[in-house]
Length: 114
Length: 115
Image 1 (cartoon, chains in turn orange, red):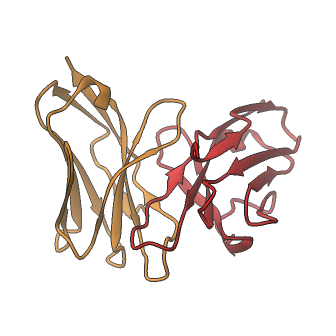
Image 2 (tube, rainbow over the protein chains, first blue to last red):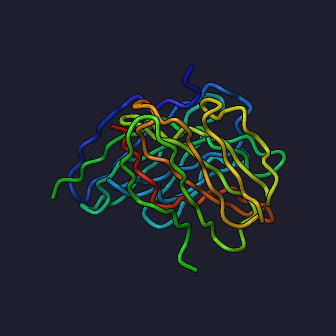
C-alpha cells in the first residue's frame, strides 16, 4: 500500500514555462512534506519543504503548495530550465518526535526541453 | 563540511559474500538513516539512529541486514550472504533534531551489484 503517490512517471516542459509536479498521500498523520531532486548516479538533493500548518512555501523558482483536505501537494518550478531535468521525489514524514524516516513516492522524471 | 559521504560508491560482489558499506554524516547531525532504492522506485527506509542508539530496525529487509553506529558518528550497513535481489542503491542520510525543520540530507549512495 503506497502512502505517497506520484501518478505521473514523466513530464516534458519547454524551457521558460512552468513545470507542475503532483503528489498525493493517503496517511493523514503526515505533517511534513519534502521535495527532492535526483540526478542519475547521485543521491537525492533536498529542494523545498512544507509543514502541514502552511499551504504554501516559496524558495526562488520553486514553490510548494499543500492542500490538506485533498491530501495533495504540488511543486511548481518557474521558469523551468534545462538543468532542472531530473527525477523529482515527493516525501512525507510524521514529526511529533522530530525527524522521522521519510516515505517517498516513486518519482516523476522531468525533462525540460530547450 | 562537504556533506554526507558514502564508501564505496560501487560494489560488485558474488552471491553469498558479505558486504559492508560506510556512511559519514554531516558532522553536527545526530540522526542517521539508511534507505534502499531499486529501479523505478523511491528510496525505501531501512533503519535509523539517533547518536549511537538504533531507533528503528524492524524495516531491515531480513536478518541478513544489520547496521551499527558505534560512536554516534559514522555508520556501517552490513549485508551477509548476499542475494541477487539485494542489488540496489543504498543511500545514507543525516539530519539534526535541534531545529523546527526536518530535512534529511543524502549522500551519493553505494551501488551494489550481486552477480
